[in-house]
Length: 286
Image (tube, rainbow, N blue to C red; front, side, top):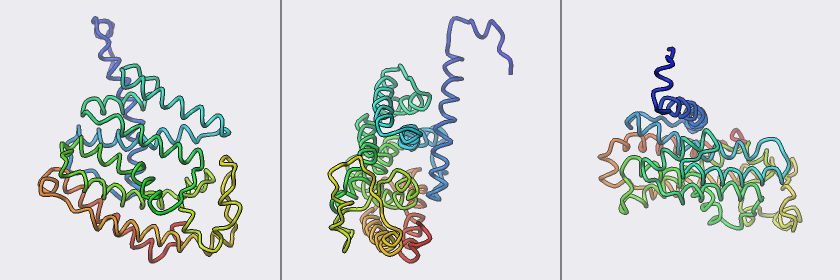
């Protein structure tokens, strides 16, 4: 379709803003769809507008992480994290420096998604970048919370389900499926030389200097033998924790009656199927 000079100079730049936003949403859609496919989740029961918003929210972590963990050394990646935080701040104020941030901020503003959700999500990337050592299972649950529960609470806001009585459900669903996401995304963690495994889960090798090293910039490396003999049991433990957490995710009557309820039920069932498969055959998930 061609735009005439009259259309383009009609005293408004709305057409250009719409074109830019369409390009921004292509970025968020591509990243979100890749994640939904990996999780074997579908978006079918939300309105088109809500589905677009949910994709924007899901893409936030993925786009930011991809940019931050692109080529470069630690200092360059730290600089990219600072840039992303600044870009998000500017986007919330209508001065986006990033295409993806523009789409994400528009969705956050339209549906009044708390901005704290996004900064909490960025803290998960900080843990990854700084190679923070997780001490126990509670630290692992907190990582899953930042990775996925923040997204699901934002989705609850989009679906008009962000009432107090519904939040425990979305938190349990987010943390349980977040544990699955950590496993499904295992290649990312190994590529960044940081594994989301609590120190007190390492068993016999827990005293290794590699685990308690003072230089937090130094990557955590496991031997081939440790990876083969230890990781399957650790993935089983993560899967068990995910299954136990999802068992506490009881949807309220309001959630069940909502248009989002069908998707959420499918996501829970798919997550449980995959977590049981991880428990039974952990080797194929590595």
